[in-house]
Image 1 (cartoon, rainbow over the protein chains, first blue to last red):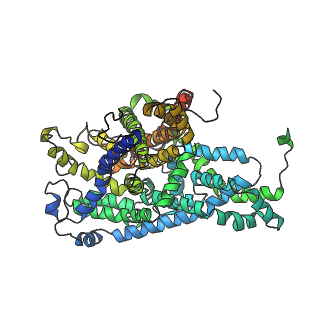
Image 2 (cartoon, chains in turn yellow, cyan; image 1 turned 45 degrees about the horizontal axis):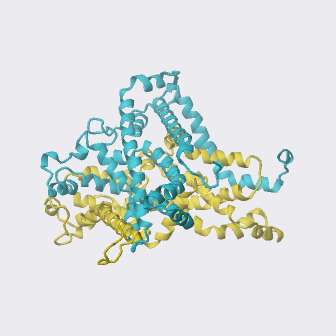
Image 3 (cartoon, rainbow over the protein chains, first blue to last red; image 1 turned 90 degrees about the vertical axis):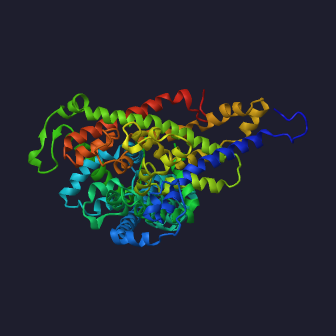
Length: 287
Length: 308
């Protein structure tokens, strides 16, 4: 296939491969980008434009009031406020307790350490629903159903095996010398943790916090099971109500609500893309 | 022998248990306790109310589950259909994107953002969005099919059609493969250049290099991703719940997935014992599938530094 008759410059394998790569990337980026762009366009249209039957069209006269109106029709502000409360309370618990547990597994010697660690990892294999049903009964006997406690409490109890595992892997890489020096100066385990390990782990903890933010913002199953009073709903449940009420007649409102509820994630992602990318790779590469 | 006489520092041990106490508490109260209770409940009839109404029924739940309840069979079929298509297609598509991104292309950050963004924002809000994309009469998907000349009567009814409802959910699941793509991309970037150079010296072409270097070096990453994807797809829930009519599995139970049916049994019909038995069957299936993939690894997964 090498160019035989020097009219055209020889097209190398690398160049051809790159052209193919561009073809794949450009072609596939259209269906990947379309839904969000379409939602944004639709959210600014009038009802006639929505049902005009065109593939996608820029709103003739952007209906910004769609966004104001959905806040009037549904307690969207309340939903957003609830979501922010739940998510920040969970994350606060996770970033406080997960590094504590991870530090002990990485750096302290105690009986059954390895056994407990393996037990912890194996809980990742369990389908959550197995423990959800008894946990629901447990919470309901305590009168905590229809409160945020079942959604928040697990965060304050170690924040899940996955976060602990990631942080433990991080703590394992901290050089021993640092720790020895601190101990030499008479630091207790708590002192070493707070003065040496915690500050070093700050980027790793931030990564976990960000991934956790996304997961809890989008969490649907938990609120669906535990919450039944409208005033306590996070946006994930609220949008579901919205769908039932408006899907057939007012998709432009539905899309506006959808854009409102995913905008915080979108902005966060665009602001700190690096943290996301590193976090997802960190979570996927350890096998 | 050293292990037998290992001495622990008392101070360290006390501190350590203090440090891990949050997790230990969660393990006992939110994992181990519920696990045992769930196992016990799976042999009982109970509506979750007063304990007086809790009756031991032996294997009745499991018998009903395996032999009598046709909805379990329907939901297992639907789940298997969804898994068997969405997982392999997702792996191939994610790998393809990662390999294209790995060609030293310009604008890599731009493309990476486009493919990864749906994974970040993808939650209930985007499911609602997709339900509209699939709208048979006004949705852009069918409008597009009309534009390329598909006659109206051939355009799928998507979520209104028994045949097309599962493919619709699968298509939506492919929209969020950006996470796997990033993981594959990182894996590809970790393949040592020398291996490709060595293969080139041996006279390998593009295809040869792909199969003799890329694929073997990537198998551990693919393997890990495969296990995670299978476990996830077996538990498909929120998408189906939000897109179709809650737990009915409309139309005609074509989207009645296993978790949807389990949720209905537990939190709508309040058959706690039966739902627990269903949860244990799900665990068994997931464990079985994971072991199957694990057993198959010697045939296709290549670990660096492993003796042949």
